[in-house]
Amino acid sequence: MRVDKLLANTGYGSRKEVKKLLKQGAVEVDRQKLKSGAAQVDPDSQEIIVLGEVIEYKEFIYLLMNKPQGVISATVDDIHKTVLDILEFDDAVREPFPVGRLDKDTEGLLLLTNDGKFAHALTSPKKGAAKTYEAIIDQAVTEEDIVSFSKGIVLDDGYQTKPADLQIKEHSATEIYLTITEGKYHQVKRMFEAVGKRVLFLRRISIGNLTLDETLEPGEYRDMSEKEVEELLQEAYTKN
Image 1 (spheres, rainbow, N blue to C red):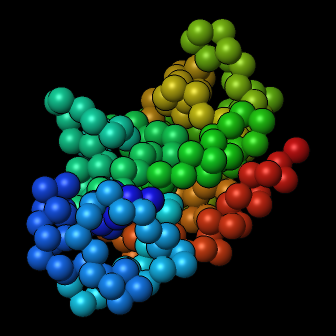
Image 2: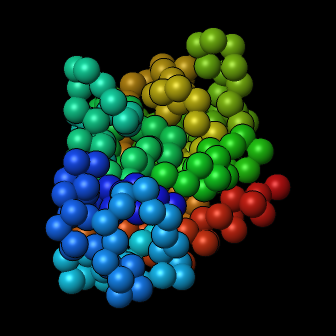
C-alpha cells in the first residue's frame, strides 16, 4: 500500500497534508524517515510512526450505531443528513457504508463497515440475519395478526413475505416486537398496513444475536468487537 494512502486512511489529512508531513520528516518506517508518498509499505509487518506515534492500522472498520430519527441510511445525500455525517473524521475517512438500511424516521441498531463481504453476508437473501424491531401501532394488535404474520403477509405489490414472529408486549396491545428474516423496502410498515394498521414508532433492537447497545444515545456509535463481528458472520453463514 502507498504510504500516502495509508496515512490518509488513518486520518492524517488530505493528500496535500500528508505530503507536508512526509516532507517534514514526520513519518518513519522501521525507524527510517520516509519522504516519498509513493513508497510502498506493509502496515502488518512494518512499524510505521507518524509524529512520534505508532500507527495501528486495520484494513476494515466495523461500527455499531444507534441511528437517530431524521437521518437517512446513505453515504451521500444533497438534501438530508446521512449516517456518515454523524461519524468522526477518523472513522468517516475509512469510507464505511450502512449495512442494509433503516428508514429516515426509524431509529435503532445500524451497522456500518467498509468490508463488502461482511455486508453481503448480513444482507444476502441466502444468508442474512434475523432482525428484531420494537414498534408502537396505532391500534390493538390481535392474535389473528400474530397468526397472519407467522404465515407471511401479502404486501401491496403482491409479494408475500417470509414468516415473521410477531409478539405483543404484556403491558400494551399496541406495543409489539417483530422479527423478520428479510429486508424489503419499508417492510415492517407495509406488513402492518396490509392488516389495516399503521406504525407510529419503529426501532430496530437486534440483528442476529447482536443487540442494540443501550448505553448509546441516538446518534452515538462505537466500534464492534472482533467477537461480535465473528459471531454475526458465523450466524449468517450457518443460516439454513
